[in-house]
Image 1 (tube, helix red, strand yellow):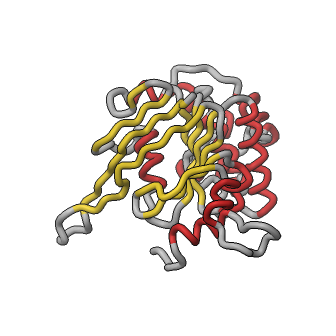
Image 2: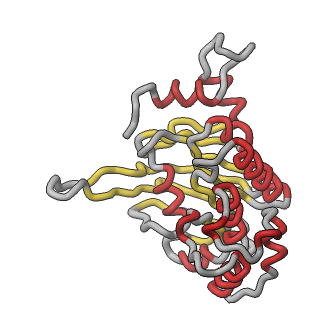
Length: 254
């Protein structure tokens, strides 16, 4: 059963000042995301991944098309949607003058909820940092804390925008383990990523975006079988990076 239903979703932005006109950031995409899956959106810079997430989260206006999360129309009732989703904030968006415990209580208050901060910190393996300030955390710890903040309202859907960018291998794998645990508990997770290994390792299905459109969507295995050139580096077929390059090309993106 789909928990997220997207039909002909479109977003335009004005061109840089003085040029006039608009450019199409997201061009009429449609997709269905099943309850309880990890769904990845993969694409080069400027493909429309983050804009798509921001429209689903109610952070960016939808120009045309529809998006529904758990039956709620995002455009018609964005506040109701925000009650049932969790959004990972970037680490530099926190107040550094208060502790992790105080920040979690503050975020919970925004939802008129009371939470047990230590229980949330336990979920992301940060209980020993309860009295620490965000500035004192490592990159991986900041990312895990940002997920704890996204969990204060017990969301049905968790959105992660490139969650492991800039992390070292140990921190990256620790975060992957956390994502798997949350998904195992029944949470639907939608993530964007540039990391091919991340997409292939975590996601049950992947949509590959390019120039604002979904150019392919399927399980990693099915995409590899269909698009990866043969014979590649692997014994039988290639990997998601081969698929990505076959669909989006080798040209550098700004």
